[in-house]
Every structure is written in C-alpha cells, then in structure tokens.
Amino acid sequence: MEKILIVDDEAFIRENLERILVEDGYRPHSTESPEKAIAQVAEEEIDLVLLDLNLGDKSGLDVLREMR
Image 1 (cartoon, rainbow, N blue to C red):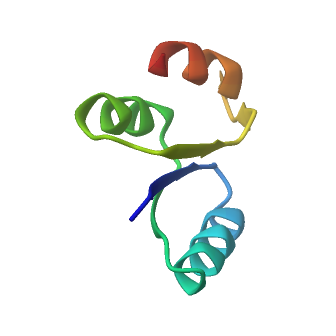
Image 2 (image 1 turned 180 degrees about the vertical axis):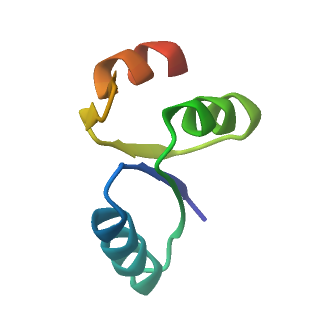
C-alpha cells in the first residue's frame, strides 16, 4: 500500500486530505513541520509527498530541495 506524506501548515487542509486518502484506501501521514517531513522522508520509504508551497517561514521548494 502506498505511503503518502501530507505537509501543510493548515490543519484543515491536512485533515481533509488525510480523510479523503483513507477513504480511497491509502495510508497517509501528515505533519505541519517541514523539519519532521524532511526527517520522515529520510527515514522511511514514502511514495508521494503532497507539499504546500507556503509553509509559514519556510518555502515548500526549499523543503523539497532538502528532501532530495
């Protein structure tokens, strides 16, 4: 089963995406913390990351660069 990581600083968006993905049979994980997301991608095999481009004080593009 695919593992999906949702990274967004808005709880409403994280919770709704997570609910939709669970209903479709996926195992989503979510966090508002860019640092936790980077660590999780480094530690686990994540199939897909849904990443907000505006994460408060950090750009989603910067987070993506660090994940690579």
